[in-house]
Length: 304
Image (cartoon, helix red, strand yellow):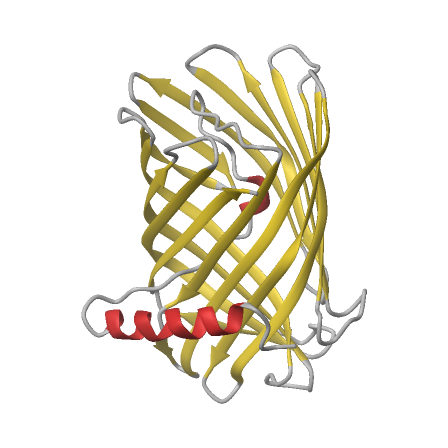
């Protein structure tokens, strides 16, 4: 099962990336909060009621004290609106996710396929507010265990539109499972001035976006990254737990030419990153400092 539908695609793209890295170091990386990405003030996309989302994310190999570190993340999911009225929209999401980590002799290209099952609720009944509540479960498809090999992700995100120019963000994000847990408040602000949008939402992202061209958004931003997986070999036991954490600075291009599809791509560089490796319960962790690495990511949404 480890060689499911993304493997061929991932291998081909990895070969291309390795060639590019000989000229310009390049990588693709994922960030923790993709399930709760704050939309840009004044540029809220309207999607069809059934969408296919495809994303590929990976890091360019980077040497550290314990060997060469590599990370990749591939996702394909379908989002279906099940209920919609003037105040509420309820959606269901199902799909697959493939995560790969490599660190010298300690993590040898550990590739883990996950399922994705979740739901989202949007509520517009409060004056000036939009509330989003998300809950996702990601079970390991090879080592199925609801306690030790399943990721649980949830978020509550409120966006208050004070004026056409000014908006506020409040809420919380939580991820647990496999012995690793992170809980973060969501708090921030966005401000629109002409064709420019200034956004700072902790811990999701902070940046500047230009929306002066039809169908295009160009952004410069800082993002947080967090991913935890179970691996077959670590520093202590078999199996073991590993968590990758990083902060990245990037430039991003969004293209939305029609109602039926949109595409985005970004490249950047991690400013600080680390890898925690523990035993099978993710205890007695060893933290490994990683050097900063360039990265990129691509994604597309299609109406189906």
